[in-house]
Amino acid sequence: MHLIINTHSSNDHYNGDCDCAIIELTPALAEQIRSRVALARKARQQDNDLYELYFWGSTAEFYGQDVLDTCQEAVAAAARGRGRNRAVRKWLAELEQREYAVVPDGVDFSAHEPQRTELDQMILRVGPSSHRLEYAVAWTTSPKHSDVYVTTSELPIAVMDELLAETVQQSKRQSRPSKTSVISNP
Image (cartoon, rainbow, N blue to C red; front, side, top):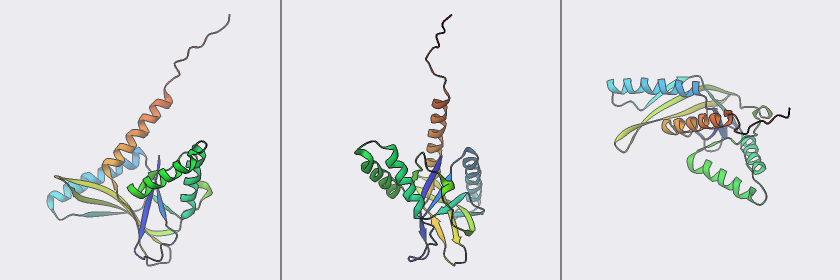
């Protein structure tokens, strides 16, 4: 499963065409993030003021507006008839409201070139949520040859786990053998 996540630039007028980030949410990535959450929990026991942990390297790729356009086209292609515009508006509203969305089926990333970036990092954030601590992950980068930082919106760890569980359920449904029986003629 791929996620598209909104980005925010340290410069209101320039983001190096890093309009969004694409994350391939795999079990391996989720496990890496969970192990980093465990590390944050341990560190927080030692110092209650912990807010963020930064890790060098990135699992995010940053793209320009063209990937957003391709996602909208894929949503429209999957919808039927008059529902195309409504489906695109719904997908865009989800992206705007949640700050992330599942990349629709049929999007070919090989047709797009990710932006050239440096100083790529994963950020693990710790924040209060009612009576307990909530953990979230974000990614940051700097477009090549700039002094700008572009950071994704946060993806709560609980949401990551829900999305991954949905992917596992879909895989199980798709891999089930058909219940139709085969009748052979002698």
